[in-house]
Amino acid sequence: MSTSKEGVITMIESIVEELAILIEEIKPIIQQTKPVDYAQVQNHLDNLISKMSGLTEKTNLTYELIQVVINSIHSSRSELKKSVDGLLKKTGVQLKKITTTTEEATNKILDVAEGLDAEQLIIIEKLESLKNKDTDQDATIDEIKNMIYKNQDAAFTIIDYLQFQDITAQQISGAYALLSDTERTLLYVSNLLKEFDYGDEGTEIILPPIDPKSFNADAIFTDKGNIQNLIDDLFETGNTQIDIPNASEEMELRELAATSPTSSDDDDFDIDALFDNNNSNKASQDDIDKLFS
Amino acid sequence: MAELKFLIVDDSPTMRRIVFNTLKRLGYGEIEEAEQGQEALDKLKTIPGINFVVTDWNMPVMDGLQLVQEIRANSQFSKIPILMVTTRSVKDDIIEAMKAGVNNYIVKPFTPEVLKAKIDAILSK
Image 1 (cartoon, one colour):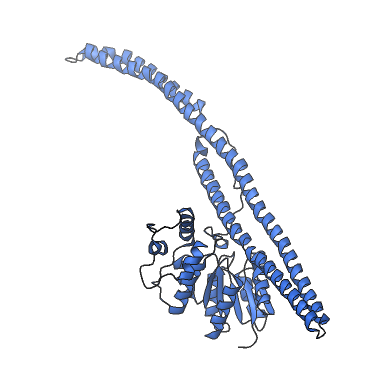
Image 2: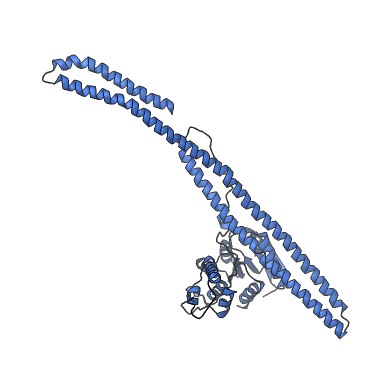
């Protein structure tokens, strides 16, 4: 960069010198040529030389400004590199770790729940073998079996809730994909500025890309009771006009319902608006109960 | 219909295990698994007797929607019932899946009761 600046200044200085020589050389010709006003021409030429000389100073100033811009570009690129290398990479790795860790933990919980189920089945079998047509004893055995069945249901409920892992993993994949896109955008900007930067260090993509087909960033872990009912209607009737709110809207409505004051006679909370149902697909009482449960 | 032989298609090992457990709990014994659509197609071709597919939508390589389209386009498997179990609950997605040929649709998280109801509904038609 500095070589180019010196080159421009040298060229201007050389032009000024050449002009001065030229003026001296054409003086005799101008003096002989009538009716040209020698003094006026001389004045114009002096002005030209003066302006050309000023260019040197202006070029120096322009160079100083350009240098500030270049330094700023260099500093921005360094910051971009730090952000990409440090923050994005670290966050990306952490996000992957969260998914791996929750998956491992979920699988361990599944191991325990499945183990419990298997043991409970064995206990039930053994209890069954203890029955000997003694009415009282058999009744007690049945009672114990019912207690075990309840415990089994509880274990299965735990398994059902473990679906949270898949849903949060998809949300995390969404966040990771966003980071990856941000990284690409930053690197694109950095590469655009590379030509103007004296540093030659390049930055490469760090976060491995993620297949966009493999996740739904809008996945939400919430009871989809009302939405599922509407989907059922859609499949049963084939009526594509059925209004299905998206899950995030549904969740917002639940939060709204949860934070609203408890109902009173003058409560103007609009259930129809809540369900966005002004047509024949009114939500049933079950839907309303589920929504407020 | 002969005894049901399920194929669970989901890229999440946790979800495959949960669906597997739920199907077992509902009394279904024969269950195969695949991580994504392409593997599911391969299993349909190589493992005889699969007659019910439970598939996720969001998967790498070949997603659930593509899988449904492939199955419906293949004369050998086109009649297999397909139940989609997914986090996608936007109406346009649901209609797209319906048009592609899924027989029913469940939004995650689901309960065993809902899964059973949908399997029964599909089989009753």
